[in-house]
Image (cartoon, rainbow, N blue to C red; front, side, top):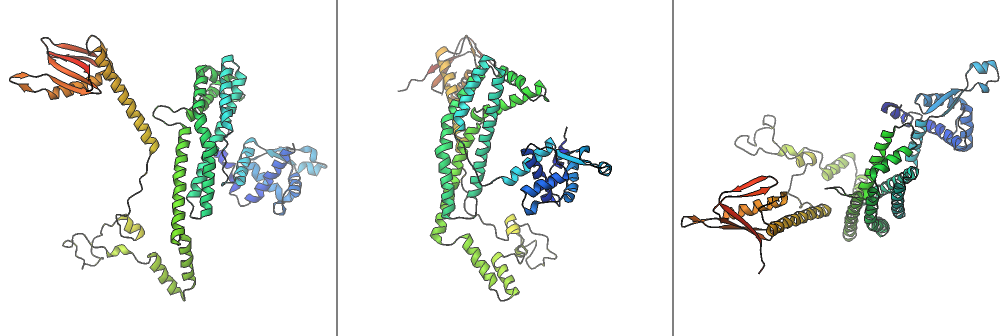
Length: 493
């Protein structure tokens, strides 16, 4: 078993002094692996590099031998003894070693190659996987009904890999778009690139995702209706990872299914990942519109950050002396003197301005003045950051609460408050109505008049009674001393 420190040691060759030579040696093993050759001697590595590597990557057998030993000490290569190469007794005593990739070493090498070969500005979104996901969901439900464990394992594996690839591409797309929008190169050409990329995304991927998300949510519900516990159990039994116990495989597939379900089905008080992608699209639209505004302002004014810096660089290049360059620097950037030394104490009677700063106590200054040298000002009002998704969710929760309260009020008006047990919502409405009615009661000529309270389309009338009444609620009994309650629906006029 590899510990965390051992796995990090696998990447030591990337920061070593001869990291380029180490990389070419590992590439020679990768080329041989592609040709179904696993074991290589130092001379074999040199011959492979001579045939496939450019001139700067070719190494002799003598140069390769210490590199192979170091890679073996880092656990990237496994070493074994090959006595068949010895033609004489002296060669046999010299010990001929052959090397091959270790399992972890090959994974580390592929990770480095993927990073070196990745195009960080290349982002693509595949919309064709959405119908495939939907079809696989229906086939998974059918396989679970039939109890076909091997088919369930294959479908779950394909769903997991497909969704992971789609999520990675979507995240990469938004990351690249954000980096491009934040660039300092404000030109019409850059805006057109961002605009075309965003329109393509909205026209193809985002629109298809909005159309397929409800269908996929229904398909997930269909799969879960066939028995999610049995599905996970059958997938764990058919899983081919023999070094994991059945319990570990079951927990792994349960976590993968939860992640897959969360992608299209929102949990309570949360947002699904597909909804987050749609919100990210709206944010990207706002960013591209901001870029358009910056391009328009640059074209209108004729002055940009680039032109200003070019003019300033020309002034520095044309200064007659070094002192003139320093004076220009101080005038432009204002970093030559500490401006905060000119600050005075707020109370001139305690610390007069005539006292030298050697003797005067320190004066508190603002962070803006200390860090930038500029006097703090109120500045322009901050840009309003709207969270439309959060506002929409809060509004939906508010409407749901209003509907629940209205239904409880109508239930009170229809069935009354006596001879039954009120639930939690009905109790809340009743206490609110009772509070309003008791507040409205006043004494007239030594007697207390009846009071009323209205809420959620119903009215509670509080009147005197010759006996005390009791209302049964989920919270307990509500005793009313010689009072009678009557709840009726308010008739609109």
